[in-house]
Image (cartoon, rainbow, N blue to C red; front, side, top):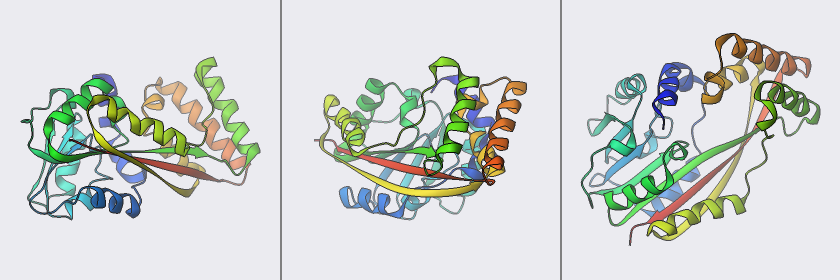
Length: 259
């Protein structure tokens, strides 16, 4: 992750914690079936953010080291998980994180690994893992208002106005997309690659949806006056269509093993 974007996320730490969703129980069950984790396990989380993906792993009793480039986010997680003595946070970019080779049982990253250069990230994780250790990468892919074509089009009109011709509307993430992404691990020496997708919906008020948008880096990178107008138009569009919006999430999970 670039320093600039890392600082942006760090400033949004409190909102991020309050408004971003966690991950399905079934996802963790699939991870632990693939690579059992217990009190003897050493685990590294890449990009913990506010810790929305962390608790189910901590509850196994493992030793968990989180890597987070945002100091405020790191502090928030230290407080949040203070009851877990085997939890620690290192404030660092993952690329600079120091970890001995062949010492980690599981590395996982939740909607954060895309900030890391693919070759650097996969290669470093492969070195860190013990033989038979696993990498679990998962991410959420939301599509807002898929059930309301008029609201969807109204939102796309606003996005295009503020994002120029480079903007493309969101599309539903497919099993084929997940399969293609999971296959990347094989290029870097991983084996036993597997993938899974999970679906859910979230319904939010217009104000809550704008709060959610305020946690995304591309929105936070806008000039403040532009961002304020952008959010106002988004909220007005939702209010004009009943005041509520449904978000359709697809979460993909990639699992890969070190030979």
